[in-house]
Length: 479
Image (cartoon, rainbow, N blue to C red):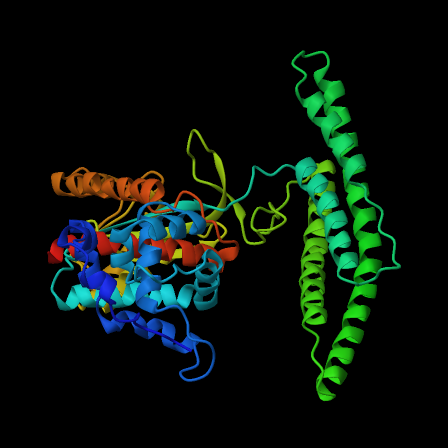
């Protein structure tokens, strides 16, 4: 059941000195901005209006998530800091004698409501700012970046060794939960670890004479690891089939007990652990077979397709993305696009899996900005990745007067003359500020690494970061 506001202040809050109840300037501005029922509407579809246990008040949840992304805190450290601070308790509408929501409660609320709720919150905030005439969109700038996933740098040997290890661990979880107790699953993690260690030792060879020999050893050990992972996956398939059979029997027994009026909580929890372990092993085996196939393609001299390449066992949607950075030539995650204005307010952002082409994403972004602000930008500028004649035509059709995007390749003489004009160069220089905006989001608002898996999780994570950023910007303008 949805709760929007917290309980009324108690006598304990009333007798506190004014110095303890006074919020810092930034928090006071954000608190006044969030004190609007419009921010509760995005959560309504995810809760029953009258049934169920009362939820955490949404005004408390919103303020907790702002503090989390504003100060780069984990869920556990966030709850600990709020519990120890009277000021943060006042900001989050949590009484002195009330408990702070548990970290797992915040995690479940975040994933339950998903990216739709976060998008609704950002839409509500921008609509509120537009109604107060705080959004300037005479000129906007667009840029893309990579939002890295929470994965280590992937190698074939490392992924295969981890897959073998996790298959054995997940098999133990299934057997401990009572599924496929009589089915044997050999633990091959030591054999995989030994081969990975021998491979890494050969990679440290520096002499040119031993380099060819080291390359041969690397290929042989990778082939052995692929065979080992495939064997472990085949054996785990039999365990998985028997575990699913045991799960069906457990479900039938539970239904019979329920019909007879008996309910065993211990049996229910054990069946829940078995369900989770079976689901984890199913996904793990699919990922393992894909990694084995990629490794054999590479050993055969072929390059796996980056658009479908598996780079993690727990993050199925992360993809290798090359952006040309010197320090990080290849990053692994999702590609995000953002649009901001002169005040630094992010008017639109979008996260897509893989590495889609920049050009086709610009027109829908500008259309969304026009829909939010009810005004057409006079100038739109972006980097050379958007430099196509079709992109310029699409923006002119939307009513944009000045499209300042350098063309890719070698432009014609007429185009060179246009790009050398003082006004064009001035707008191109202003566009580089979008890179600073991206750097600010990565340093201060969590865009340097998403801590929720899948593309949906990346959209949730980046959306909360944008919400915290815009709350500070818009509250400062409103104050």
